[in-house]
Amino acid sequence: MDEVDEWLRQSLDNWRLDRLAAVDRAVLRLAATEMVFLEEIPPRVSIQEAVRLAEQYGGPDSPRFVNGVLDALYRRLAPVGEP
Image (cartoon, rainbow, N blue to C red; front, side, top):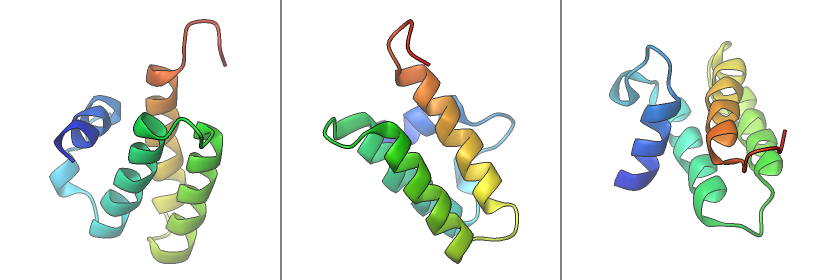
């Protein structure tokens, strides 16, 4: 979990992980774990599923926030030259 949290910290802009809503933090951790460690799951699928979970269980701004953080993480993980 420490490694996943570090990846998320690097992708958060002006936010601290411990200050996030518990649901948003859990959704981000789940999706980040998939993106970092599970190569068989396409990152875009992880992002889409996380946004859907945020829509269902998070606050009104959760889906957009989760999408932004995970998109930043995806850009950090993507090899040079990939969108």
